[in-house]
Image (cartoon, rainbow, N blue to C red; front, side, top):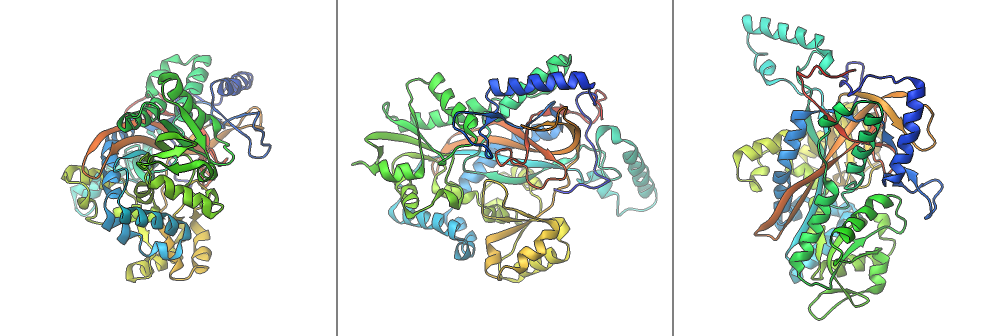
Length: 532
């Protein structure tokens, strides 16, 4: 993510600043409203299992181009199918991760479970994928007509100059100044295949902001906030998998961390299932608990103290700290060899590694997994530059490129959960500390240049009244896909979430304490109803 003086600013949904007395009153109301509607977390600095803080949130929704939002929604089922096919391609997974597992112990441990499960044959062929495709707007997308005229002379160049001059004047609609007359195009930051959170907090942020807009007398703006059924969409995916398992007394198991800070997001999934499907019981266990309580039955069914598990939903298990001993790894292998339907299965988990995503962005690779040329073209457009750092000719050239122009890149390891990336000018020192072999555990990604939005970010213990700040947003689109290697039985888009952070921040995870809950306010390039 990169911001400079030429970064465009998307118009806001209402005129800011608000009068101070009105701002103080509505912010105080919104804080209480957030807590009372489950938009809350446990404090990391003053933890207590008996108390909650409201989750950081943006007071009014942030603008997002309608056309790009609709494209992302429409594309999600294709991305679901792509990742399902990738996860079931043994040769591709094995070849792609061959160098990474030599130097990345965590990925190697996951791959070892995959290898052993393959050798014995997967007990449960059905996988449940609950994915989240994270994207950011790229403000430097070039308008195709402008690009195509760049090599022409005469009148074409005159037209291009007029078009560029017009673009510089149209800052009202949030253009990349002098580059494009559009609101930007979206690029995929990553695809999450494990613990894809905010199925509750995504819709909850819309609930808060709807309340705020109504309190401020802007009910007319609500029509521009898209519906968001992420919680029901994801939970219904788990229930569909439970139905496929077809054992009425079996349960859904949530794998959790020892301490759950993002408790509301997790619990609301559980409570939705219990309230909507009261015949289905939900258990919460850590990997350590599963190691202590778990065993396989006569038909390889997973039993926790003799309770049969139909579906396993991992909200933990995505980082090394979740496996403090061999016992937790044994528990993961036990679950993988069981009859329970996993979300994710071990092959889905590996399909979500950064190295696999980097490989998918290479020319002609998508053709291996997608048959339709138009779908290949559509998916290919969302990839930003992703580069291998393997110890070969291409990887070494990418290494030199990163050293020479580090400000253009992000360095990413095979990790989830936020706080692991290296940005810009910090990249050379990080790379120089690695051996040639160690570099293969990382990938390089082009830095995205998102447009700015401006608004009030409300945080626990933050300044009152809050100040207007420059922000950038990251949109996550949820998807659910269920099937085996040969057939997909369910595949749908399942809602969205928006995280917003200060424009000066590199990382933006709300659960990690770096971002804020938000929701999109959809705007059109020719829509005059808006403000800076």
